[in-house]
Image 1 (cartoon, rainbow, N blue to C red):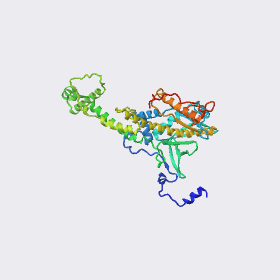
Image 2: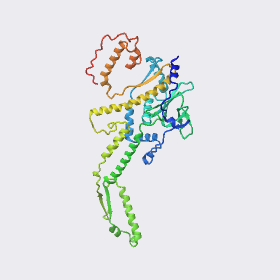
Image 3: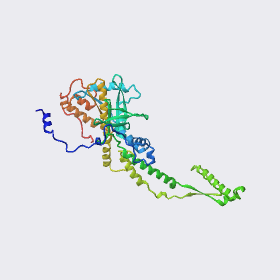
Image 4: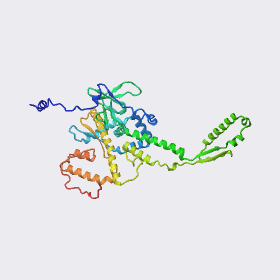
Length: 449
């Protein structure tokens, strides 16, 4: 009896003890999952003015809020390491010649085009979309001959998911207020999410919590500004001597109390208008019918720093950043700073991994359409905070270790070239030839960890 038939007969009557729960159980065929409107904070005027959904609000915050903009800037700069495009054949072996040839052929797509980005620029745009919006789509645009001509990013906001045949299919909303959707369930469209809930089809932004933290801080700062302007700065106190003004009123006005009251009110308004135009450095020239003084304030005793520090902590946490990056560092031990930095580096590294996946998929599609039989792997260099010259001893030790493995035949020439970052193979095979007769003379005693 075949193994498949054996297992079928043995487990034919076995049913799962629990039914898996997912969002599919709450949606019917043809239902669409769209980005939900951000209604939790629509009662706040400054949030309502930014947009109607979370994607628009996050976009505007990163345009105008210094903390959000700086967190995004630092995240993208950390993640912007060199991108390697690696071609592997059907057996999974690195092919240096084909890698170099594919990269050369790929340049023809963007080198002489104004709109088409390079793979590095495309990777940077993908990482930006992933960090801000939690997902991104990329379509490989083909010419009439089915050759790739460009790569177009599709915003996560513009993608809705419809339940079709037991799975969710992506559709693109038509821009410009048009009705209907464009079916993106095609081989040339790829989508990548960051940390999508497995029970929810649509990808959500990891910065949703930043909306509440940043907008609340903006409200507090606006209140502090009003308090400082009202009670913090010295203000002029102008006293109009009514008896003197009455004595100097025109004769036609003195005899009529109604006209006199109107005249006095007009003089006070005119005086207030003229004084409001004064600059701090201007001199004040007045008659003896007016007395000037300063209003004493007591706002110096109010300390807003504890409130601001609490809000800063929430903003830093919501933006997935570090206090030192946002200019809010307050000292601390070197060990704590090193641990925080290592934890922070994991986030841009994770963005790189997600970008590598979708880049590998779309470039593999391009390679197949261009006549290549293998597949493409895109790999970023590891993020390192130390200068290149300081890393030279570590690079030398790594190179000697790789050459030693190659010499004894533990890795192939292709693997060695890939690990060393060399885009060509040696003239003659070296793997297993023991071309290194002895251990390399490398002093590793002074290499710092």
